[in-house]
Length: 166
Image 1 (tube, rainbow, N blue to C red):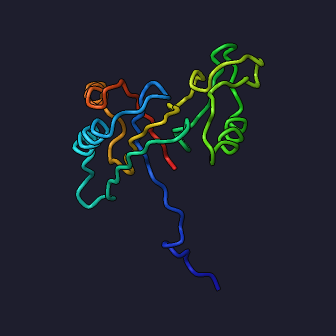
Image 2: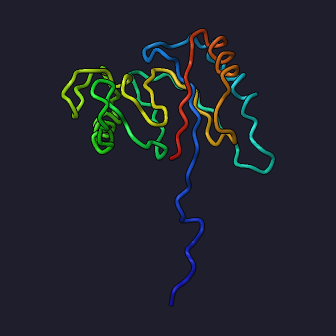
Image 3: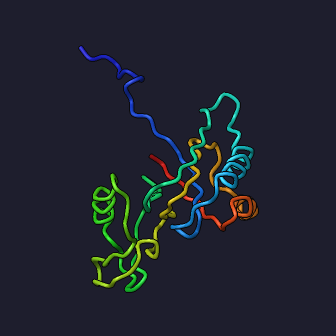
């Protein structure tokens, strides 16, 4: 006898909209982070009856990947233009998931050129950071250019955004 699947056991998925400094090594002072988190909260109030919006403000001890999760379509080499196998990327992330990245220096598998991980061409933005504001289930796709500028001014450093589906 078969029963319908238990909906409570089905995997949940989340969308995460992250804001990170354009310089992967830069970190703000706590007051600037608090001020910026308040602006981000005002810009992502969620929808009535929707999933609750949660905002995490994190200072990372090492360079940490902020990737786009299941949104990643492909990765391109900035030197030869070839596609880089996403399995190579996945293996790299797995190798550094616990301890972060000491450096972003890498030799790409396509042409053997030394480059930086933040210089690769990601189809859906990915980045690296020591500071991140992550908005879980923000009920919006992206911040506008004007909103990103305001967020960066509050933080004290230009920012970029990464949208992940996990």
